[in-house]
Image (cartoon, rainbow, N blue to C red; front, side, top):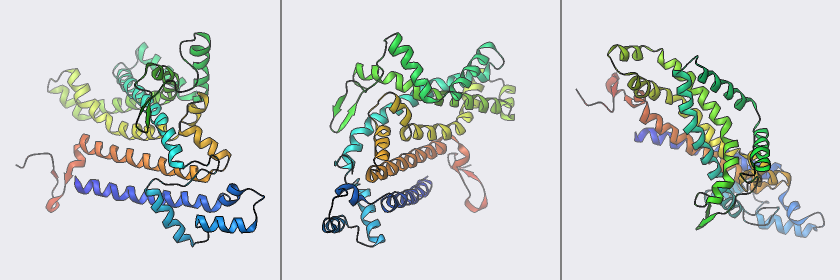
Length: 335
């Protein structure tokens, strides 16, 4: 187990180094930060002093080392557009994006997995066909269109939910949360549903396909032959093996929800990382873009590590060692 975790951590460090190199190259090729800071009226003397102060006249390796050491501490410099520290901007926006993604992921998993199991176990029935037809709509419709339709129905016509903003939040230290206020949940409902619909339909179709595949395997037939109940076969054996590939997709999708909720945040004017990134791209705010890239990579690395650990816990085939050339299950007692 320890060796497994250490290997994954080594891979994670290598990935983060590569991403840090890409983020550093943004500073080299996406315009000159001094010209953005000082403007076109700056004199040559002012430009030279600014470059010396920022360390831009040092060698590439020295600049990369300084960038890497600062990035490890969460210091990406100052925003060229707003003049504030990038870490402060990220700390202000990240809680909103994370909470929206967690709410959407919770909805997708809580509804997607049971609906997929039902569609597999009741294959060919009217309810199963209705779910599959609805899932096609969820997969094919773009996210921004779903958001606009929900706003039109529930915010404009019915006036049940607000159409923009985060609502009332509670501050816990530097963290702001919408989970502790009723208005926060009220504002989060529509964007969370919009973000969850595609993930829900994807998980439902994946669970259904995997469940149908597992139900055809020999060990399911042997379990039925031993007289186990349908409930034990379906949920004790089939569903557990179905969730192994589902965890991969779910983990990647949760990372995608956090990193790429840009469209949903734009439609609902949600004050998260996506809106900050769009503004950074529009104004070529390289420090913010670099911080967003590194944070996104870190999120995916952490989620993939968690998924790998869940693999280790769920799939006993990964807990098999080869001492002396023979296979032995680590979790099984010695005979």
